[in-house]
Amino acid sequence: TSCCYILHSVKLGKFYIGSTLAFTERLIKHNSAAFGSNKFTSAVSDWEEFLVINCSSIEQARSIERHIKNMKSKIYINNLKRYPEMVKKLLSVYSNL
Image 1 (cartoon, rainbow, N blue to C red):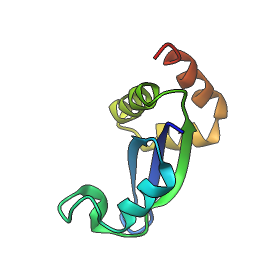
Image 2 (image 1 turned 60 degrees about the vertical axis):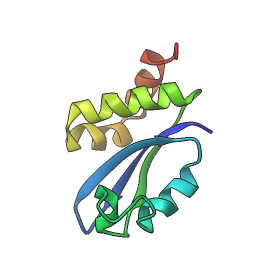
Image 3 (image 1 turned 135 degrees about the horizontal axis):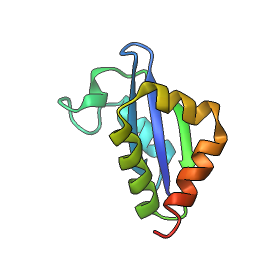
């Protein structure tokens, strides 16, 4: 299933936004530095699922990922979890992909 996902690290106090076709496997890779030791997520191994947005296509997931990254806001990310209608709106805006 395609999805856009947001991970959170308590140690870093930061979020990571990505998209994938296989979330569980991707989370394991982030926590095991499988993408290389110089990648952002390799600094810690406490990444946890914060929010997963199930999408109808990988293109939709990537568009939502870009949108969230462009917001550059922890408040926006927290509000996505707090207000499910925001996620519904994103899915609607990017529904034709």
